[in-house]
Image (cartoon, rainbow, N blue to C red; front, side):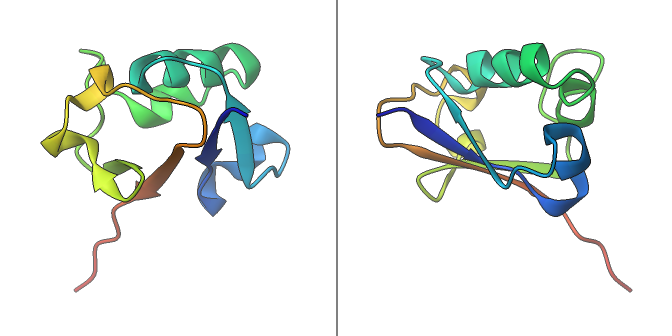
Length: 91
């Protein structure tokens, strides 16, 4: 069993319309790198030029925000679910 990464609708064009992608990465950061290797262009949508997760992108591991865990160093194990959720602004 691997970790499942839920891809938001705006990024699915980069993942060949896959809603869920599996990874065997050990950390969130490694999962982002694995996604980039498989789907070029996705990493720049998720992290900024300093390598930090963009402010308007929320990443959760099992419904917990990685900003309150170990950020990109948050460990992943079999059966975990990573959700990438773009922030939505309104007015």
